[in-house]
Length: 452
Image 1 (tube, helix red, strand yellow):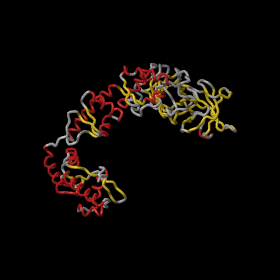
Image 2 (cartoon, helix red, strand yellow):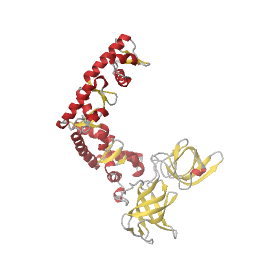
Image 3 (cartoon, one colour):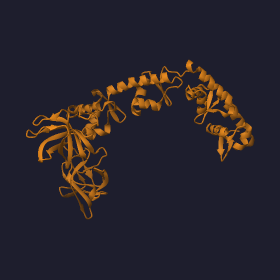
Image 4 (cartoon, helix red, strand yellow):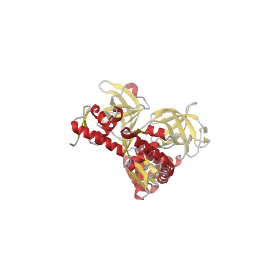
């Protein structure tokens, strides 16, 4: 374990739990890192159980806070005696998370036997003792050699951090066979065997973080995970973040990703958007949500739009993203379907047509995309979510309705039905559209004009 630091995240592995009258549940142990003060909120893992520090004792003396490296007793409010035991861990930050798998560098004593795939061992880490299956990076771990990479699959969760040191013991007979240093407390579930552990074990924090980011692939790693996963205190994390730009790592939102992954994503989204234009020539662009998914998340999508926009290759307009060279056009292959749909809207008059009705008329063509194209071109108007009108007919219907409303002062749908010759099924969508456009205001079931 690295040297304790007062400005680090607080962690106290529990070695004893008991109850005292007037104090409640008391946990004791040695503070491994950080500080804790009376009144602070803590989490007890596994659980987690939320609690509050009622009092602090350091080496038997009442104190206001506990410092790293000291024997500490915490009286906790909100923790029942049965909710903690030897091996539990008290922390004050949500960055700590239990794990059931550890990547580690393992060194066996010369007197130990070789360990093969899925050998059963006992891991002692802090005050926790758990059974683990050992998965060497190679065929087996040889005794007496330098540290070798392995994954430990744990029978019970523990709280661990990069750099934590553990002891390995055999189950029968019970003997110490070696030790390990935690290299990754939250390893990826696949591949099944550990990879790149030596790089993640480096003492240089910049190179270590770089190794974590590269091992994370295009997804990288969350910055918030680095304090625990890469063993960085608050001060060292800030220093490392300032030095990563020259190490092939870039920050996108709350994550660090390989620069190469960002470069690959840039080319990938350009190809994806171009393919989308080819497949959907009627649309003004690729829907923003689809673009975000293609980019690999909203943060990366925003970054790529900004970069490619400055380069003159991509444009975001409202909820659409398009290549700067793209303009929505009606391809020759859809000319007949376009004619049929415009004819349908002309024939529909004040009733309009839904997207489903238009699709039934042209089953082999993208009817809704053609209708939306006509809306953007100004030939049609969409009312509500999917009812379309020829512009000239909707304008005529609205003019008649407004004239009647102004004549009556306050007009109900029943009074307007006669003026437009429509049933409520077709009338109400038009009236709601007029409300949305600010032409009328609804009062109860009636409408009045916003302007005389």
